Image (cartoon, rainbow, N blue to C red; front, side, top):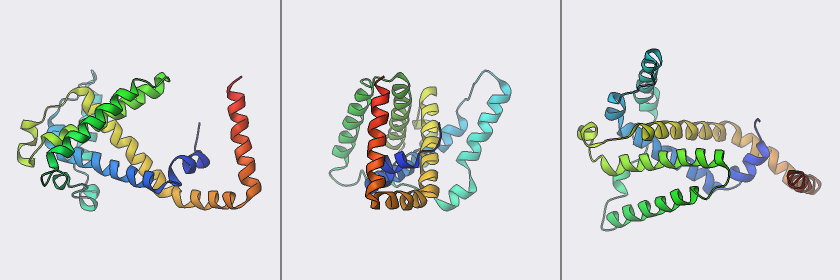
Length: 206
């Protein structure tokens, strides 16, 4: 287990729309977390261990009131613009329907570990949507919003996963692209890479 530059390039970096979607999703979830600051700060974090509870509360406050984050990204995503106009309600309904379809597809994943992680991240996205749909104003955020324990866990976990992905793309993306572009420009290297992937697929069948 470790870094796989070739896989990262094949799955993400070579597709600019996927990179943009990654950044957009990160900002979308970050906006949900910042918008639910009042609720998340007051939520009960009962792990069964008093020291862990205090540590969890401290970490949440560090996340919610991080001065660097507030200075660099005071309003990461303005969801109000999405719901403006006559098409606003229709757009909300379309997003909810598409999200339900994605949730249903996760039930068809064969790998249990993949299904577990997938469901957790889908729940995190659903929680972000729930926050952005239900919280109309910052003054009434804590009163109008109600989240379950597993929703909070999924939301924070998803934000962590997305932030790690964005960090890796930002730090390693340019160097990986240069390396892969050189390999692709060399026909022999490209052919070798193709045969190596085929050989791995054959070995996986045994």
